Amino acid sequence: MKRYLIVLSLLVVAGTAAQAKEHPGKAYIEKNGYRGPATCEAQGCHPGTAKAFLSTVHWKHASPVANVENLDPGKEYGMKNRIYTMCNGNDIVNNLKEIPPNPKTGKTKFTGCNACHPGNHISDAGSTGKDAENAVDCLVCHSSAYDFRLRKPYKDAAGRVVMGQDRTPKAALSVGKPGVKNCMVCHEAAGGGVLIKRGFAFVRETDVHAAKGMVCVDCHGAKDHKIPTGYDPNNWANDGVRVACSDCHGEKPHADEDTNRHVARIACQTCHIPRTGGATAKDFTRWTQGEDGFFEPTTLRMEANETTPVYAWYNKTVRNEPHFIGPKGSRGDKQSRIYPFKLYEGKAYFDKKTGMLLSMDFAPPMATGDTLAGVASAAKTLGIKEYDPVPGWQTVYFGSSHLVTKEKALSCANCHAPNGALNFKSLGYTDEEIRKLTSAALYFDKMAAKQKENW
Amino acid sequence: MKRFAIASMLFVVAVAAAGFLSPRAASAEDIKLVGVITQIDIAGPDATTATATLKDNKTGDLVTVIVTDELTLDKFKDHRIVTGDEIRLKYEVKDGKNTSKYFRKTAGC
Image (tube, rainbow over all chains, first blue to last red; front, side, top):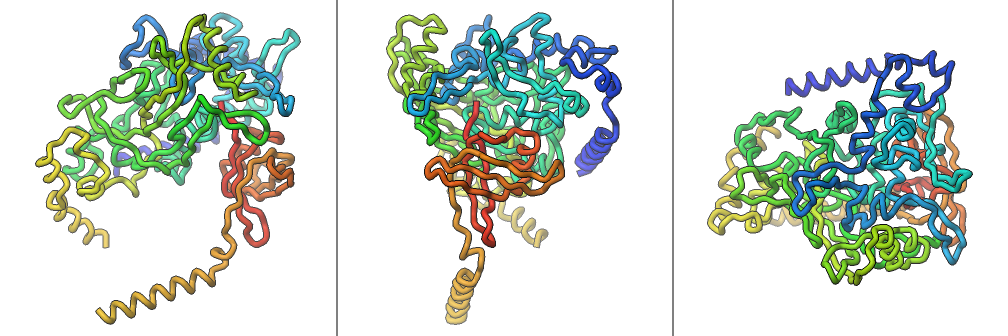
C-alpha cells in the first residue's frame, strides 16, 4: 500500500511537472520551423537519437528472437517478415501500396502492414543511413497535437508511395513523453481493425492502471527508445529488455501470505486478468465483401473483456509449428508458471508440399476477394515458384497482460471449486490432487473471516 | 416457507412493474449500421460532445448521432477519425436523439 502511495505521488508530481514545464527549443522551432529529427538534434539536443532509433524494433520491425523454437538463429524476426494467421501478411509481402480498383465501384485505396512504420515508406522497416534518419517521424509518438490528416499515404511525382507526416511547428511544440493515444494509434488497430488483435482498450473502465492515470510507457518505460515488452508467445521481436509486474509490485505483492505463495507458480495475470478480448478466429481463405465493395478477412470479433482465457504452463519459451504457436512448459518445469492466454484460431493456406503456412499480399483479395491471387502475389515477391495451397487452421496463444483488474480478480473460490476457472486435469494434476484442490475446505475459514470483515 | 413464497412473488411483481414503467426499458433498442462519415461537428479542443453524420452503406440514408465518449472525441480532435472514414456504429434513441454507443473505424492495418 505504502509503495502504491509513493508511486502514485511520484506520478502526480511527474504529471504536474510535465504539464508545467515547457519543452526546450520553442524559440528555435518558432524561428526555423520543424524539419524532423534534424530539428530535434539541433543545438546539441538529442544528439545521435535518430541514428540510434534505427536499431530498435519500432524501426526494424524485427529482432533476434531467442525464446522461440524452429527459427534460424542467424535471422531476425518480426512483423517485417513473420507469417502467422492473425495477419497472414507482413511488411514485405503486404507492403504499403495502392490496391487494384474494385471491379464493382472502380475505387482503390492504400493498404499495407507497414502503414504503421514510423518512417515515410521511402525509408521503410530496417532501412539505414542518412535518409532513414531524416525520415523518422518523431512526432507521431511524441506529440500530443499531431494532426493525423497529414499522416496519410500518397503517390509522389515519381509514383512512389509515400507516408505523410505532420511536421508542423504546432505538433513540434507539443512534444513530450508518449501518451496512451500515441501508442494506441498503431497498437489498437493492429491485426485488421480496432481491438482485433490485442483486444484491449487501455481506458479506465477496463484497466486498473489506466484508471490510476498511468500511460503505456509508465510500465513500458524505454531507454534509448528500446521498449521493454513481456513474453507474449506470439510477440517475438523485442529490444532485449523486458517488463514484468514484479518490476513495480515485487515478488510478494499481497498482504496475505497464502496468496503470496501462489506467485511462485501462478503468474499475476492469471488472477488479475480474468477476461480477454479481440478476434477469436479469422478466415483468410474466404474474405467478406463490405458495403463499400472492398473485401476483408472474415473475422469473429469480440470486445475487450468478452472472452474467457485458456490457462497453460509457460516457461517463456515458445512452441512454434505451422499449425500451432503457443507456450511451452509443464508443471514439472520449475521455470513454468500458469498464465492466461487468448486462444485464437486462424484459417489460411498451407503449402501441401512443405506443410508450411503461406503468406498473402492483401491487395488482390481486398479488391476482388480472390485470396489465391493474394497468395500468388506473395509467393512471387518471396521467389517461391512451386507451391500447392490447401486451406488449414493454425492455433495461436496470445499473451494476456492488459485489462488488469483488482476488484474483479479471481479469488480462492474462483479456481478452487469443482467448476472453477482452472482445468487442473489439463494442467497435469492427478484426480486425487484435484479432489483436494477443488474443495472448499482449502479456503473456507479464510474466506469466511474475510467476508465478515468486509460486511 | 409460506412467508418466503409471498416475498418472492412480491419481488417478481415489483421487478416486472419496474421494467414496464422504466423509460430506459421502453427506449433502449440498439441500432447498428456501417457507413461513411459525411460530416463531423465539434465545438473545439475542450468539447465534451460532438455530432457525426454518416451515410448508411445499405440504405444510403444520412444518420446523425451525438458522440460523447472521450476516446472517440479525442480521435475527432486530432483527426484520427475524419470525414470519409467508414465506421461501424451502434446507437440508441434517447430522449428523441441518436446517441452513439459504439463508434469505430472498420479499417485496420
